[in-house]
Image 1 (spheres, rainbow, N blue to C red):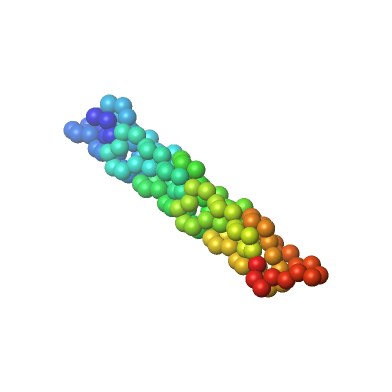
Image 2: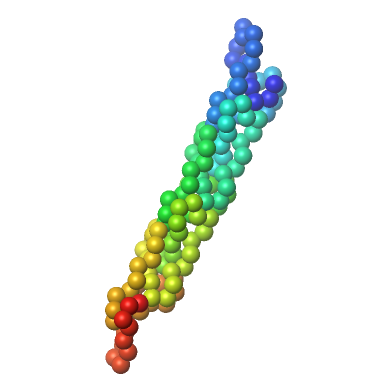
Length: 139
């Protein structure tokens, strides 16, 4: 049956494919490994894709949420770091630009406020000193 295999001709019954593997054809002697960005439970006939914000290695039984500062599209085997001036919480499918007055380094899970006497535009990675005749208490 599908989702199972018969490891040898001497076997009297089929065995379920283990988690992280699948078999969609009847009469098989092996199971196939799920690729990166997919997963399966035991006895699977296919490997569903990980949803956006999650990833998996080949042969996985579940998808793992991306860490804060990272993001992923659906079917990802790796999470990507947020660009400079952007941030994300865990399990994110995209990164958000830092507000004006805040900055972030690559792979940040939060934005930091600029110090007094400096400012930044939205999505910036550095704070700029206020010019003569101008001030900023924070950001």
